[in-house]
Image (cartoon, rainbow, N blue to C red; front, side, top):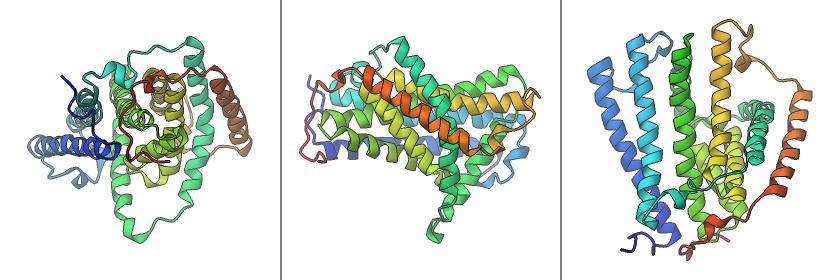
Length: 310
């Protein structure tokens, strides 16, 4: 049986992808609203204005909601749509392709050294004024940041493992399946120029996070993750890099909470020389990636590209 979406044009498939995503997100929102109202007594998440003083039950409920929201919104959408496009999802998304150990180690090193550069981008982004018409984004961002701080307010190792699963493992897999495996994969299979496809996907990745003050850094991160997927044809390389980026904040916060670190690194400024050194080492990593890249075999099955961008 021919997959029903295989013959559709690129533009129509992208429209269907986000239609399915928002449908799944609508279901998540309805379920979340029910849980918030029936279990926690809130009408919606924005009513929880003082999230730093949430009870353990409230935090646990929200952690579970966060994990299932990512699974259904990103992971399930990517799996469902790839089956409708190709009849299967593991090969289509690049999940069944292995990566070399040297590429994996280089991805980890790249993300570690890039943290100083990413912090500099956040500082630069903060200097960009937000239009008054978009002030509502500040409320969304503050609510999300307060919720994250509530999640990271822990000292037990068991809670560290749970938070790592929900905020590092699941998002790394789910978001990479959706943005790199599905959207970027579709753009590349439709013969959109790789640089254009990577930049567009990275921007979508940044915008969907609704973090205005971090838009620039998330965009650059999304482009790098897209580049890793493009040069390897394997989703695992971008998943590994994404996980390293996510786990760093959790690990450093945990070490600060239990007293091993005396300073909260997330609140510290980065010296200019470290930023410059970070950029130099990161550029060297990109050179090695380009030298070790493999032929992007995941674009062997071409899809219609009547609306592909030049």
